[in-house]
Amino acid sequence: MALEACFQVGTMAHSTIAGKLSLPACKTPKIAAFSFSASASRLSADFHPRLRAPSKNTRAARVVCEAKNVVAEVLEANTNNWDSLVLKSKLVVLVDFWAPWCGPCRMIEPVIEQIAKDYAGQVICVKVNTDDSPNLANQFGIRSIPTVLIFKDGDKKETIVGAVPASTLTNSLTKYLG
Image 1 (cartoon, one colour):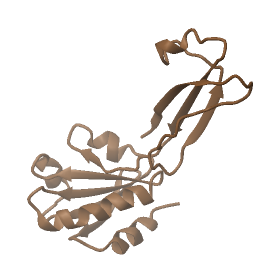
Image 2: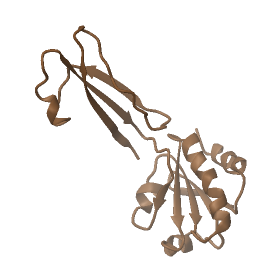
Image 3: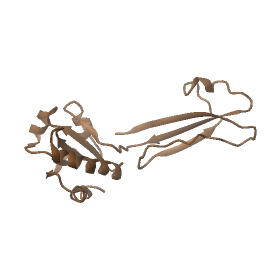
Image 4: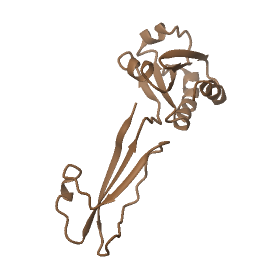
């Protein structure tokens, strides 16, 4: 999964001194790996309509952040997107089978979210609501929740049942990384 051109920020920087570039402060998403480029005097009509005709003392600035093969959040899977998110992924995939009414599922949710951030670019974290996708739960023999499955190259490698500590999940994941 790739996030291309995750965001773009455009600004007009007024400067009478050549070579000076003033950009507004902006917060970037917390992504493990991204490329950053800034260029002055490079205009694009499709970027912003006001950048088409700058005045003499105006410099145009364009900031682009591109994240490649990085997802730092937990994605929701169902029968429609299961193959593309899990089976065809080139990264290790951690799948959390859960339900909204499940107390232990809510306990493990922040752990999974932290793993998604900590292992962004190495692991894709996915959650499957067993109430909404009972066929997926049946296909993998999910009998209690939360159940976490670890996939690599489309094959199920490991099953972890219950609200386990973060160390249990990270120890299991590290076996399949690299």
